[in-house]
Image 1 (cartoon, one colour):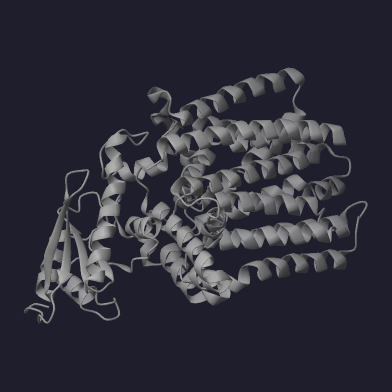
Image 2 (cartoon, helix red, strand yellow):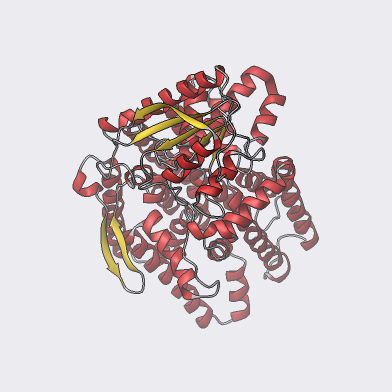
Length: 583
């Protein structure tokens, strides 16, 4: 039953559930992320948002446009929207509120897809499952681009389904807008676009030409497909055309080139290990084992029902056409196509799989339509227990539930069956010891360290030690991104920063060349640390960088003790001093 009253009733249920989940996420970030360390990506993206806000406030739309384009190859949408929210108040917590907004958008899109596939009540179920996925919790509480990309892909899928095989131009245009925004939300989603157009084309051809009762002209639907493509291009093209080279170099290097070696194992493209790797990441990050098992069983059951109907149908051709033209088949094409796109790169990325994972619950609930009432009740009880466990572990109120625990899965190795560990905490804990599931008071010192270092380098710059400020360290809690954020957030001043690269190798000669290169900016200030243990790869040996600095003519001017006990050293290039031999 899909009466307006039924839709409204279940939509209100979804709204109430999402409001409760959003409130819990807001409480969590206010409790556990306030004044605590940020990962290098989080700090960089929030710094971009503050810079966008300062540009708009100080120079208007032209300054905003130029500032947004200066941040390429990183996708501009999330920082830009955050900069608009900063009209009310500028801060780190306000940035997380924008992510919660994308959570709400994702959940309602999940309802829309589920409602199209299985009706309002199961659509409501799929929306609440999507909103409480372990991956959804993770990426609502970490300021990266994963959740906006997932939300906008789901919006594009919903609009495509509502278009009825591109019969509706209005929904085709809506799909194009969502696709364009998705491309601006995360550049790696370029790999998802062909799959959307393949699914749309299949739906057009089957519904307009081969269905028993075609509902529209083939040519008109393809015109609507062209409108969808044109709108998506119009939304995304201004930024992509301006920044094509930067985006191309970034994607080819980090997605398929030399830099991808740091972000995933080297499996053959058509090898089972590459496909298993993507599936493992979906389970490890987005679903966890209990929910993954339920989804897998439901998908197998739904597929079995579909195959049985085809086999038992009196007119198999008509039954096949009906299946190929269904909304469920359209979503299945998109899921499979996006999955295969992810297998094309060895770079597993962070949150690359969540856009695919959030489409699985709406597909899985189709199986419930074919069960007896008692079986539906039993299935919902099991699902409620699994979802309740995931929600409880994500609150971090009970350490025994929040701690990551593993189970052995045949062919996949060990995968977590429960996990309340935020990825931001895990990233910092790889270098700075502490509780595995949350930040604590001893971690507060990192924000002060970043603020103090920003004050030091800005003062040195004012005294004539010209920027850029070069970082030899690749520390997880104090780095170029966290220092940039400290400068723009506390002083409304952008610090010109550069990172030593250890390319082609980790050697004194490499750092001599970089520190004395005009292409590198001829740094006037250098930051090193007493240890590189736990640094982000590729690791730079700090003693090598300091040796190179001395040979170039740098001298140490300040030393700071960091919260984890290591020392941070600030170096300034001497005036009129010739480089020593060896550089």
